[in-house]
Length: 358
Image (cartoon, rainbow, N blue to C red; front, side, top):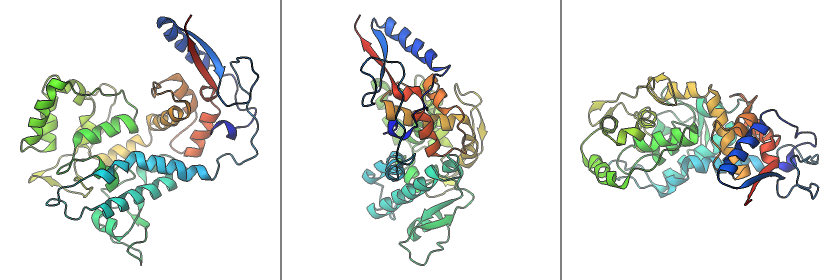
């Protein structure tokens, strides 16, 4: 897909890529296999194995017109496809239905199609102050609906407590349980898909019963998080992501804004000064989104996801030299077309490592 959209002179030698090759070779040698750099399958190149591929100049535009809507659908599905299988307690959330879930998803799909490819850049995914809604969603969010047709999706100004993708009902409802929010699910979403921080292992089997017992207790989500933070071995992992989830606690299990839980005022502030891989202090998720949008880690994570999609190299981390090379020069003002072009020009896409037994 990417190889057909870059000019013939786009693949050049890079000072950082040989480092990637050496790292890969060292890893292969430790696993007793040899590594050869070979052309990407499907690229017209000489029959001999080569470390470089010159790609043909395209006749089509740089980004095919079918691509934006396709990738937007993939991205919106990542953010909210599981919403369609969600069930909410009808006693607590009588307004939630399959129709409302579909409308939530449509908002996110339209939002991503605009902000992934627009001139405002990728940072607008997190900082946009308007979002496409119909009357039902506007009512859920608590803002007036400016349209004439209640089923029509129109751009609606967001209230101060809403910002970008992270506070959309589709995301918040997906990352919640049947009868309450989930600090764990929301925290893992930020840790992995949003920031590409180190993967969190599943809890040990002998801790499952304790987890289930904790969920049955009449506790707020912050109280549960504090209990996990003070309990070993739970705190080894939960201290890495629970803080991210607590930032979202002012939004209930279907994405409505709230200020109390079980009659207790909600404190959504988090201090990450003792976090192993992240730093910052935030009053709520709005402050967090504004900060993350300007950090290079966000664009690097987007680049990592697309590079993995294009190469199949699931082991690539955000700090991998292939990702760093492709994202070099990209900022929050870059849009997805810029990221795709940077990846298409990257040797990581046109070269492959082939492992074989000695």
